[in-house]
Length: 407
Figure (spheres, rainbow, N blue to C red):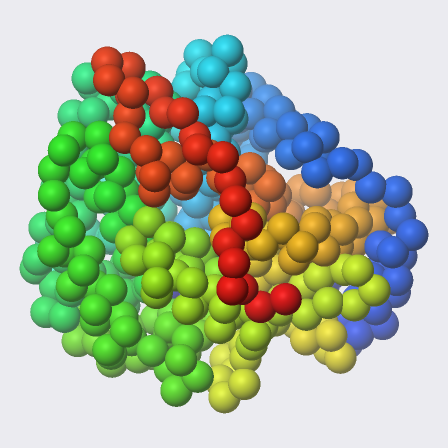
């Protein structure tokens, strides 16, 4: 599954132009005026919410996303729902407004699944060969929806949402138990750690909210990850067959998100993977930050995951977008600030070429950037605090910088 993990600047276009354009844009980004991070995050959340809540604009945006990849459609919903949940946690006085958005995202997704099944959100090659699991359920689909449902409950629980979350988590658990090597499929005989860890986070949220215990399932995966799923670089691979054999090595467009999810599954492994990703993939220049898609010892194909690779800088828009999310999740504020400063680059691109805002990659990229700017309270609450009795509203603990990370 060539995940949609993302192409904030894929619209830059022809690879022959990316060297000059990329360098010029970074230089321009040094001098461009920038909104504050808070203002940017609030503006992006309001803009994306307004687009979803307007039926005409929602339909147009879904068509645009699906014209690039049907996975974009589901992933945009997930990242928007998570961002809305973060806002609801930090601003309880606004919770009703953001819960209504999350409920709409969930209801629309469930209706689409009822009408079109899992294939509605999958690329055509989902039918290219037989699935190992005869149920032909995609962990990508089940995990994304389970995560939306769990995030909604973390802000304020609801009996109907809780029942839907438990049912979706039961499907996830069954898929892990049925998989030969504990790696459920997202596509036929393809398991992606991005999807695996998203699904396990949804299970972890159910444990917190319902008092269930899936520690054995989580530990079995994290032990396997350390033992069998790492590349020679020490970084986790991105794609595997269901027997555990690696198909694709470490990719920034997957690894940053996997490390972020591992914070709720195994903090030691999470710290190891984040530190390794920083060392192998993270770059800085004149106060701007970006990330590569591949590190030493492994290089894959330039595709929808990586976005166009800017030569000389070896910059991947997708990897950079997810690095923004991971740096905040790990309390690496120095690196996060540099990545935020670099957002002046897509700002400048859009100013020069406003029609690019209609591309599916741009829309998906904006959802990832919003997640990178908003992440924090939800993950912290899941990691550190049980729900407040009776309401399941969570009081996020204060964030602290994590020590021991690369400078």
